[in-house]
Length: 419
Image (cartoon, rainbow, N blue to C red; front, side, top):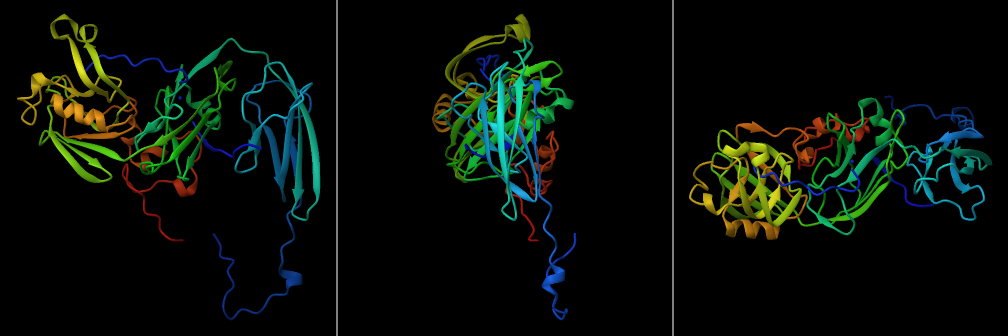
């Protein structure tokens, strides 16, 4: 069988980003107690119960159908799924809790399948059950999906798993979708999902930044899976990527300075000019989403003929969907470190912009503080603009007790009291 995945739950083929610019009880033995009689104290073994789903001859099932494997008093020892007329078993893996077996890729439309499941009791009794089912015909109503993670790329320590849905997934449908989003980390690190209010984006992150060198293996298994009444995910999305060196940027509006840290050591400080009062920069923790060595900012459509402009820009690093960037601004060098004159972007000199551009990766975090405007949730990859207790509240499924509310701030490891 294939890998065992952890659950997780955004859009598949990602369109180019538009550049708008700057805008219980205790069972331990007790001393002094009388010795117990093994013949009377040992609890009887849990009765062996075993069932498989779908029910035999069920028809019109989604191509994301899993083989349910409910077992009490034993464990699942093998699962085999074959297409009628097929010659090779279909690859897949059990969920961690053995509640079901998940095919490694979507099944085919309008096909019949046979599942054979064997479970073994604690006493060594093996039992095999078989069921057959048929998948539905392809639906013409789909939800577009996107995954902002690509194979063999290196990302920053704050890179969330970002998934998008168009149209967004309603609250009542999110739990079923989230169950089909899987994330594996090596070395293992815990994590949770958080849905943006309108359901168009969902983020996965850990309580703290990823460890440098971590491998992220992601499968958004929503191809043919119900995303709303009569609507299904367009396709599965997969990616395996690496987390690189830790780099963190901090900007203080009070001093108009940016501090750059590598592996928690300050390596450079540079003056900045932020958004002027009419167009303030957002305060909060943002993530570098895109990098362009050369581009053009055209804001006439957004700001109108009086305020709009069209300007060649160097070393642009996108922070928000609304058009906030870090970029070179030779026209504001005299203002950098002194006053705010931008349309919301973080202005730096050409030399500093070039140096910074050479250091950063997609997924590196930047925190801006002290401005007149707070970062809006969902305006960019805002997963780290929340404390961990706030973040886990956005999950559509219960979060395991060991990942429940903590006091940690973003990027800080929570302290866990000994039991």
